[in-house]
Amino acid sequence: MHIQYNYANIDASDALQTHVEQQLESQVGHLYKHLTGFEVHIADENSSKKHGPDDKRCTIEARPRGRDPITVEAHAADFYPAINDAAHKLRSALTKRLERD
Image 1: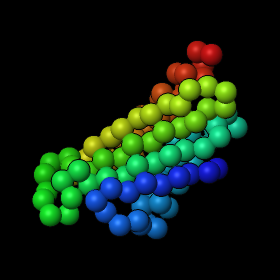
Image 2: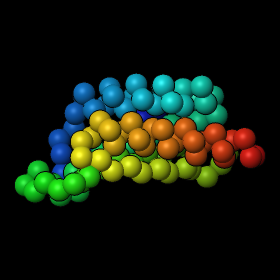
Image 3: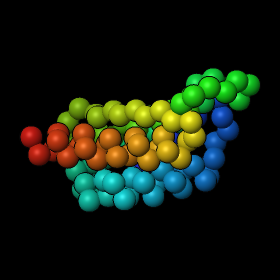
Image 4: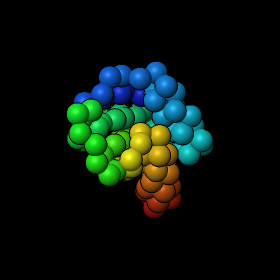
């Protein structure tokens, strides 16, 4: 499955990309046949110079075949919980969209 990664205010990370891939496989792997790919944005909204509550963001856009993209977003104090939450939200959103159509 094609995944495009975008980073804001942090360096690209193989560890984060691996975690994203594991979470997507776990949460929406059973729906891959309906999808053409993903775009993942990982950002530190306050940059590395400042810290704040829930300043880490993960946005995932899934592209269902022949349908409009679905985008979800999650915030947390650390990137890994933000990725987990976004993948869980994506599962719910995709399931609703694909069941409805």
